Amino acid sequence: MIAVSIVSHGHGAMVARLIASLSAFPEVQQIILTRNIPEALGMDTNAQVSIIDNGSPKGFGENHNAAFAACNQPYFCPLNPDVELPENPFPGLLNCARISDAALVAPRVVTPEGATEDNMRYFPNFRSLLTKAFGGKDGRFDVSDGQPDFCPDWVAGMFMLFRSEDFARLKGFDEGFFLYYEDVDICVRIWLQGLRIVACPSVTIVHDARRHSRRNLQYLRWHLTSMGRHFRKHWGRMPSVRDRRVIP
Image (cartoon, rainbow, N blue to C red):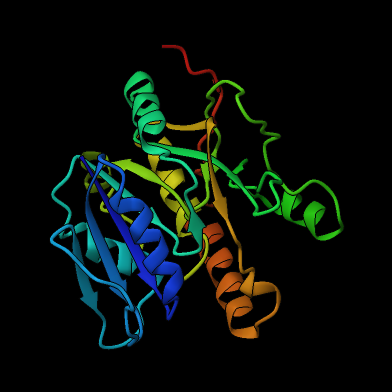
């Protein structure tokens, strides 16, 4: 039913733990692991797991698009290697997707300490970015455990569950974004296509975020480059998400 795509950049034991968790969930029928750089797996593989080895590192979107080419399931889930799944999130997410007829659904994401992360957001604009830069609101939705499902503008790429037919219709991620903003971009295109995104706060996963762009100049350059590409691409044609209710 679900094909999960994981891209490893030398994450080693972290990936092994995640795959062990996924293998225990009956909804996960296919796991596609991309080694973006050479590394030893340190784990046993089985028929459920297929491996793609890159000759040179590729970007977020290009890696997941290549994994989708091998997907043979009705749902496709790009998943960060630094995600932890204390419980099976997929029954609740699949139910949410069926009830809402959403192209993309996402869970509530929390830190290892239990604080809610900012994976459900309003679309960025120049005013909101300036507000955030000066310590104001950062564009996130206030989300609490168990609140009703709703439609955010966009959801972050550490965990996205797509209907495969809609991911194909969208032609996947825009590979012009090497890293960052490819999740914003595909969410813009979902709304422009007349499809919808639904957040499911009753389903929770854990994300141990690395925040490389705050500490590494190369990641910061990728972040700023992708931000510029996003605004050039969608200037004057951003969708407006007017009705955020999800009514069964």
